[in-house]
Image (cartoon, rainbow, N blue to C red; front, top):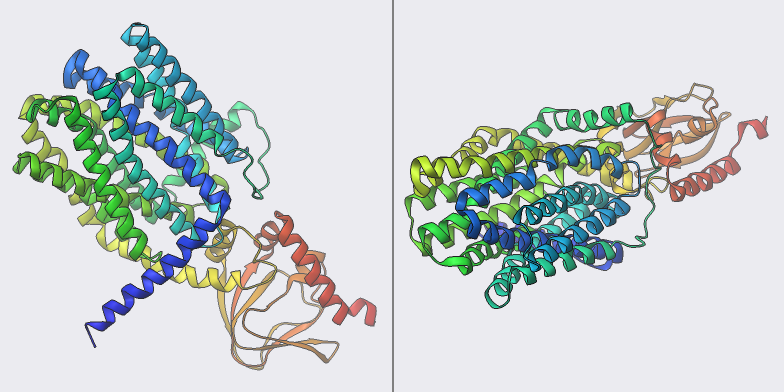
Length: 560
């Protein structure tokens, strides 16, 4: 009996994940958005490997670290500024522009390299390409929730995106390795430019209803908008914990940028193909991690999964310093890939549920800015640590902080998971209401976050005819009678709503609502309800239909 229970839980999780995955696969707009991400990140990994080999041939590990720092440092300034655009304009348009600028910059770098031009020009164009690309993930992460219909579908979309990220970690280095071995860096650069442009083409004409766009504003307001993104990162303890862990992972990623080149070229002396091999090993592990997460998460325990992923970024590096033989290092780098897949599942799903949707692109942009800083710092510091301690000593020292930080945050991660499981139940209740069902997932999730739970004993009134209207109600459990002018108008049950007429028409309550049985309710304040249903045409149509039905059955103005 005890052995069968875990198997049943696994089967249930597989079934839930399978249904959500099928929903993602059937949605054409989601497929295109995810394939665009895959193309963009395959290009990024191919370009990173090709550029790293070019830099190493010219200046060793120090040059690799310096070029990585030069690529990432400007992004710290560009990311929050560029991400404000994704909260003002349609987010796929920002993604298309990012892909276009990036593709053109890499194509220009390809031309300079082919003509034997100055290396400084190649590196400068690489900086431009990276600065253009730094907005891609924040804008894409902010776009995905609007394309999904439920928290589980968003989790599944991020799982699939994580799988594509993992595949790109494998395919990008393999493409670069093959082209470097059998053609030249010029060919590797050219393939990267082509993939970057493909990522933009896939996002043309995306069919979804975007939230109302924010108006264009002056520069001082733009600066305040950027500040709002950074403040959003620290808006609550849960967000701070998740972001802090993620930044520890990105610092370690910066260290890894140098180790990926230094280990094969200086420790194992395997040449340029060794760089591609060890990087591809990370991709193989990432694919395995993504498939495991896709099959078993069921949309829960995402904070704990992120924590485990962060630990798997650092611990294998430390073990590599202890067991510095090539088979062990390759196996441990595969574990880093598993960690990469697990981090992405939680990191790009949970903030979308913990911060306001209208700030989402700016918050992800602010995070991307800090990512650029931490990756740049990791890339810059690692050569100095290698110089002081050797490669093995640097691996041990730079790998330790990530698992230590996760251990300190572990209890809080479990608390975050528990709170979101509770909110998922509220989301399911709100989604069952006809006037709310058409709303996009982020709006429903925000309503669930702000909804107040209340209990009403049998025989008591929720409100009385003629009262001022200030809330909208959804019945979680129980039954209620609607009484107008002393007569029973209707009886409501679980999944029904009431209270919308007074809010939408700005009038007193048109009828009384009395609990027939004990009532369990969710209530939404008037501003939250009006803002949610008034911003989307499909929900507005549902509300108009409900008003006509309710007022046809009983309208005190007409009956008087």
